[in-house]
Length: 303
Length: 236
Image 1 (spheres, rainbow over the protein chains, first blue to last red):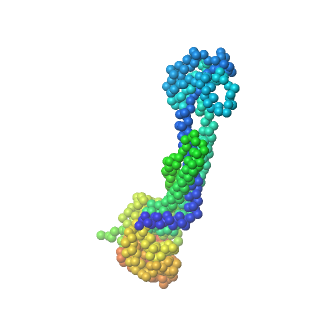
Image 2 (cartoon, rainbow over the protein chains, first blue to last red):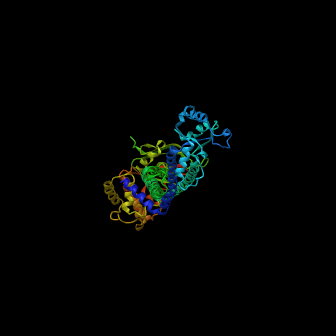
Image 3 (cartoon, rainbow over the protein chains, first blue to last red):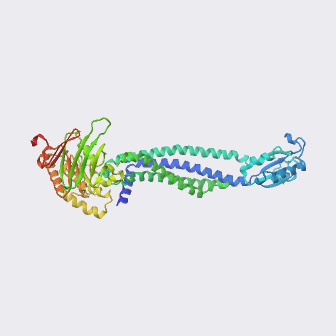
């Protein structure tokens, strides 16, 4: 009886307050889409970091014949210098951070270049013009600075290069996108809370006659307030479901079908990632509705 | 052995705003089970406050209020609905739901306190018959006369058999002939053992019924008389 009553009231309230309920649905939809987009962008960033940082190396370039660097004034790095650099990497204090050190001679570098240079743009180069290097794989790519500092400035070291630098621009772009999405989400969430508050208030005012009679005959406060709370929660949940569906469709068709087909060397987020975000979106929606109800109902349906 | 008091006020005062004249000033009253009591007095005499204290819509500034075996000063907010189920309430403006039928208006009072469907379906027709509205179950409130609408409101108030019935000017919107019918109904309900407390301005009714009269003036109890009449002077 009571459940039937509550759901009847919720349905009636949503129908009578249709445009308001619809606006709550839409505003929560948009705001949670931004929340979800921010979360998914960060997941993509993490995926890229996991994927790429594992592959990147630190390159320690050794002094060539002619270099502008002071420590290379003596000319090409000697074998003794190379050995001492290698020992710093393999046996020095940074050794635990170093997973693997490979030496790439000028000839090897030249061969690699030739391999890649299919249209002979670098045809004039010779092996002598190349730079020998140590390619260092790190156990933790984040510790680059420590390793770089250990070898930088050693006699025979021309330059230390972190391949992560290449991705820095991309990651800061993605991070900025996350911040923008999160910022918009915050504003929209505030709008959603205010709108839900107004909706509940209107609904409570338009049904004051009923609620007054309910108080008079001794209906419990829970029964009086439940329909209003559920109204807000139902509308917000619909918004969250729309947001989750929208995100899933975007990921499915934009990323999985289109981006994955055209830019293939990257590991992308998938529909499964949206499914891990979706429960959070639902929780946020229900939480917002509860917050708005608490703020409103005490005043309009007092005991 | 005195009968049990269903409503008892001990030295009750109520001050709404700090420094203002008290709406009720040190009132002590006992109303016993089965009593029929008129509460009279001009506007602003404290009648409404008196009723609100019993319904626990307000709390006394000082003094103790006991209703239906409960000490209202100590009653927590979440127990208030249980108190209200012991008190039927009828008002001058009927307070019916315009979009519900007579039957549904009365049933509403039972449904929202969680009564089972079969219970509702046996109680409502029985009560409508008691108030003289048998056969009008399917009517809408706007199709009824004022007197009939008030009967619906009374039916809703007593359908759960509360021990106390509070009436705030129940005949205030009705013509004298209709009012008499309503008073007969209230008298009949009183005879089943329900305590009736009725605030009113209607001197004719009070004079005719010759019931206990409690008179308030400026928040003070100036008269508590068995088989009284409306105006104090008239009884001399």
